[in-house]
Length: 212
Image 1 (cartoon, rainbow, N blue to C red):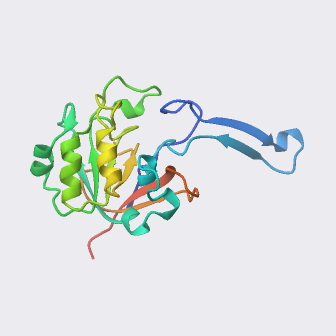
Image 2 (cartoon, rainbow, N blue to C red):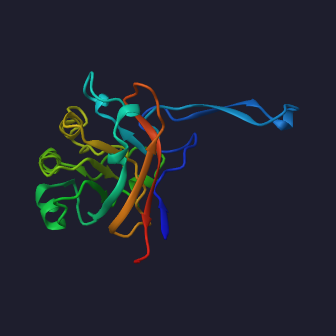
Image 3 (cartoon, helix red, strand yellow):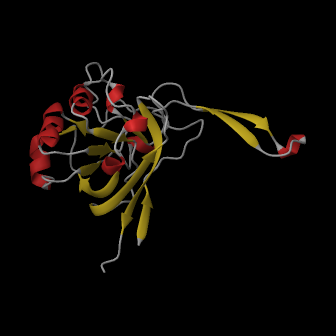
């Protein structure tokens, strides 16, 4: 069995949309306290995280009530490193993702913008038409290797987010797929159980099991 950790490390200088994480030392052995204790200030969408439907739809499912069956199970990592711009319906057709419940897109983001500490001016996202095609095909979770699955040209209207989350499809963002070969895996993605939250940071892994 091979395990790929696709989770970004969380630290104060990391790539982040907006305010970066902050760490406060509450107690320390060096100062004579009984133990080391830190307090972290970070957003629900820090690092590798899952967007719940409540992120864009008032009254929709929050992160603590999303189905674990959507977050754990067979997944495909799709090679989209040839895409420059947005992933299109034609790209989906060529990749043969029809019938997949959990789809993770590996793009040039993983080896480029995802490794920077500041947001890039452009990145590979998912076109609204491709998002709707995935919904029509019955997908339950869609992942990408950047801060957002949205096209860098549509962060004023958030069309892909409205489509996916409005249909109850979960979005996994900031998945580090740089070292992950395209193919079939088992996804284990467990966001923190933040009550009534719009999303949550998560530990996510992909498992490749040896043939029986």
